[in-house]
Length: 130
Length: 507
Image (tube, rainbow over all chains, first blue to last red; front, side, top):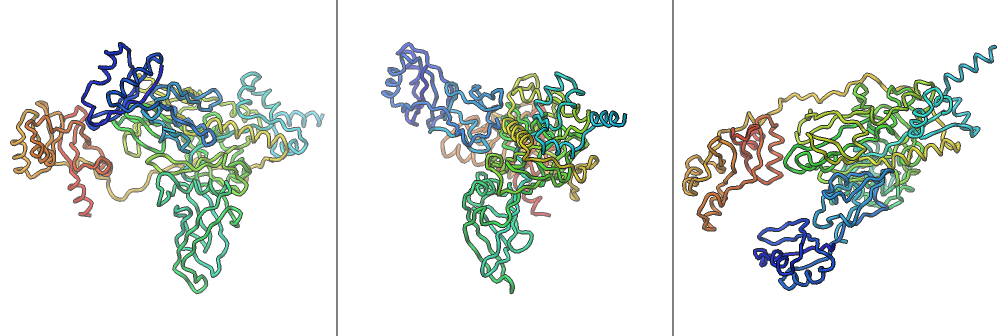
């Protein structure tokens, strides 16, 4: 699966772009998060990797800005393994190991589309979009 | 015969002096408290007591009541500081000319909520230069009225960590019933019991392993921030009867490591300091061996609803540290994730380091010269003015139904001279709110139906909420009124920012 951030400008929010692409390409697209209203916004989607290139191109043609999805980045030097972030993660991407160190799963992380953990870090070790 | 009796006695008891002699000779038997718990489980209390002289505990948690005393030395011409700032964080001047106290929770005036006294202490410990700025009124002996300079820890005469409350024996588990995210000193609490947080190291905590404060007291030498420090008494809010004892500690910051003293930020709450503390517990008798065997499943704390902004917050139930450390707890039949806030990894690391210091003969134990009190009571504040609740301030709400016309509602705003109309259904239950501004907008945007302009997400209050809490809601959401509702959502009245202002202004 390939993840991508789709950004919709104010002008195109009223069009059913995602549904059209799903129908045209007969490809299931999983919407993981959506923060969008009349003023525009973005959604995080999961596309079968084999079709990803084609689908992304199709979105671009319809005026959608496509950006690669990036998980949060943790500064291991700064992290004190307190675990404050752990309970905030909606997709279980943060794990507390047996030795109480904190591990992040980049595959699961929703990155900039979520950010719930970012401001919980007391030592500001979690960054997003880098 | 006499030899025999003495022999028996030494098996039943040992003293700190004897343990220190063993440290000197490199014969001391020291375990981390975790290893000791396992040993007691495997071999029993009697054997564990015979085999082990000392156990080491540890904790690494955030404590706002932390700070450092510094002495700057005198400038030329000298200054008697009146107010001072380090990296824009105001530091307290309550003593002689150039003695200052850097409080961990004091926030930067230029970067509030991101940088504070805790960070200043960490930066100084790391060897960084910081910017000192001070003003004074000037005296005959201290003529200078202003100074700006750079300082680092080597420039300071004293740089002493002086924490007036650390090392909580145990603490509560926090959750939030509210319909909004709360940012607290217990971290970020999601709405509708979406998560929970807890603090404290449970079975690793020093005081939890010496619950009667037999070996931890004034003068106990400890691991503090990566070096040796001392317990100087009970901490503020020391609450021994509720197993919530605290410690006051001091240590030399110049010898500390930023690995064990970290400035921190709790978003929208403030800044603080993570403090690493490790305390050795001499196993003086079998009873002590039994006490340090306490496990997380035997240590309980309350799950507390921080959604209620009162001193006595509702307690949902008791939960053990074992459950808390599993990462999941059940709240109202739903499993939610729970975050530790203190670092259990660091706590273990500290216990391990202290163990090595003792085994290697670089750390000797000290018996307390005075024990911590076992009977003090943590009292609430004396308040000489009554708390005012919403009930005293609320007035009748002007209401309307969803199917009424905009014109009719506009007229009601004029005749009742109000700014807010509460939308209710036939059962008087809250459906939304409309302000005079919404009516203006409807006219400007040519909206025809009331349903187009009703605000559905309404921030509300209840009759028994303190006025301060209601006022904070209005400020936070930038609104000027709150419908007052009961548990069933029935509208009882309205409280406006004008009424609150009158109340405060009238006093």
